[in-house]
Length: 299
Figure 1 (cartoon, rainbow, N blue to C red):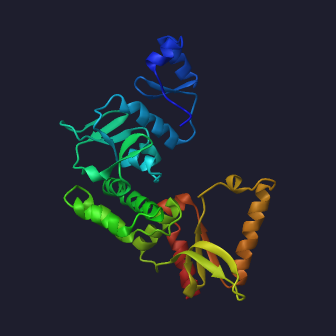
Figure 2: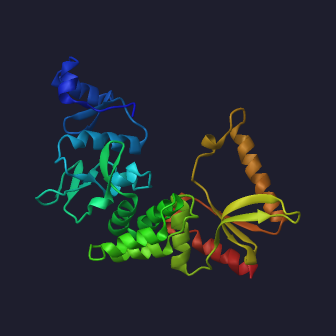
Figure 3: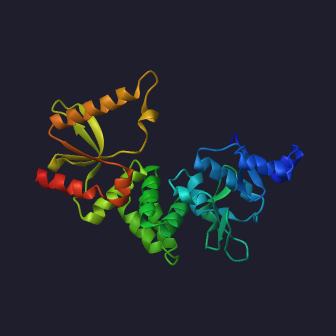
């Protein structure tokens, strides 16, 4: 990692006094990761900042501790709640109890040796164990989001199920089992995962995920997030990326928007009705009535 954290002692060796450190913090020239650990400037990516927090944490904890839960999720590239990235999470294997501070949560939880690996130089729970821990401790929405993402990355469902069964007495294992049951490797984003969950909760017909539309000549037209071909209905959740980040070099945002409109017109010419919703609607489920009305019209 190119960016590294600096300790108070290192800043002082660079010639900064305590007052100068405070001044740079107030002006945004320094950012505090935790007590005695800083990074120069600001970091836009919360996951990168969390990795720096983890590196700064290692020196102040028992060498036997293992990064777990949210921190392990970051190391494995799993989606985790942004609001929890300000605190590192670990499992204690040494004697003592779990504890919680402003920048670190340490749990005393059963952990087998084969559930620990080394990643980026840090001791961390394996992918199956990380998914299990997140699924049993996070709200159910996030349990499904994490399980979907892990299956998409290639985690076998039976491996995840075996991990859950192995630790069936741990708190939240039933929730993790439910998440594993409804998880799918076809979900391409957290918004798709939570949208599918809202559909299941509302009792809507189960859609085909990553549904491909083929025209009468057998040519590929589009891939949509959700499809109900028997109803001639397609569903897409927007917000996975800003238009600006999707613009190829040499093209304008307007070009991308127009291409999307032409795509939707072609889908309608083929007899499909497209229902779209955004991130907020996915989380609160307010897209469900519109989707239900579209299904009723199709029927």
